[in-house]
Image (tube, rainbow, N blue to C red; front, side):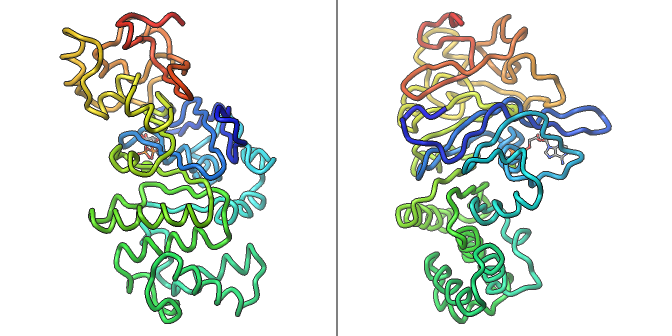
Length: 335
Ligand SMILES: Nc1ncnc2c1ncn2[C@@H]1O[C@H](COP(=O)(O)OP(=O)(O)O)[C@@H](O)[C@H]1O
Ligand SMILES: [Mg+2]
């Protein structure tokens, strides 16, 4: 639900995705809800295996089904529910109205085609451009993402580009059809720090120029701090906290967010001491999600966290968290 009054370009409600495996069901995404406002940059953060990628892939029909099954949810985008769309309708959205960039361009780019072809193809297919107009646009796009000597490089193959340049090519492809939403799934993780910073700078610039909304997925809260308007924290297939970036960094309410931020919590005494040394394994997503996914690693967990899975409740302006413990009061929350 939008709280800033701006219309949502993407509205995800109660998304639930499971994987059926021989050893039972994996609850990879459990009742995830979020929205994206026009032009905003939403950072999605959480450790590996928390359901970030599966959430985004569920939206645009990119999961192998089976073993995946999207069991519940609604994903409103441009007046239609993407979960109710057939494959043809989804194809028209994917890579056109919603662009995406993944971590490893070597697996997303096709090694047997030159990059020109890989940019021109979607332009012809989705935008109906003629060959020569698509080619001109492809040059423009490579220039836009800062690839020198763009016209000549259209004929080059993915392996002829450096890691950072390949990521720029991926961004050019994702932006080719002027998407309303760009989903970037850990796009800089494999790059060295200097190149990462350059890509982040590029994306900031592009957003200003083109005005699309962006979902930026990372396990690194530091990356988010510099670019996001709003942050959504995921743990164990769920959203555990969400809020405007400054608010969330200044007033984190979920013990897991606090752990990520490594801040000394406002509660004093023994609990505070223990909060800094949370240890343990990521949650077993095979367990049924009827208790708090973080309870096993949470120093503040009490009985109720075992018996029920906390719902997200408002904890500040545009800010909510899914926790039964009120860290400010140092007492269980009255919900
Ligand atoms: N093909 C698959 N088969 C079974 N389980 C899967 C599959 N892909 C992902 N999962 C499960 O979904 C969970 C969430 O994965 P993912 O969304 O990729 O995490 P993240 O992107 O946050 O690192 C994983 O912990 C894993 O258990
Ligand atoms: Mg991932």
